[in-house]
Image (tube, one colour):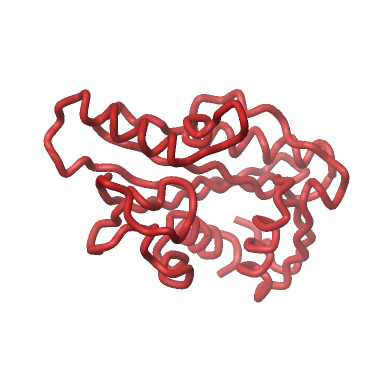
Length: 202
């Protein structure tokens, strides 16, 4: 697989915080990272039915719009006793009439698990899929997974999303109780980036 070192790349997001995060992770490899917002572009509607499908959809759209090698990600929470939900709908579960509220999403997750009468521990994992698309049609996909369990009540005011109810395997605290450095060392996104580095930058 060809190397990405020293390339100018588009990150298929309008979130400047995410752009800065990826730019920092990949800076040692000489990558010049820009976002959709930097180029005045918008991403496509996420219409696929898997993390891989949505990541590739965004990467392909980015290449088509910019002509640049494009990196895209899709991620979410997968709960075994909920049949893999919320999955690609992880952020949707937090939608309210006035924006996203992840306390609503976490309460929904817990309520559905209680309704299943499934015994604890409730196995779950965070997943992150990264897709890279080149202008000539070559593509690569990398995945990171962080296994753990859903706990209740919520614990911790750090992190974001579902972090306060997710306790990673091998840890006695939730992601919401971890400082940023500790979280970033073990997260599903960090593991996906490690796979990307091993595949295209090692």
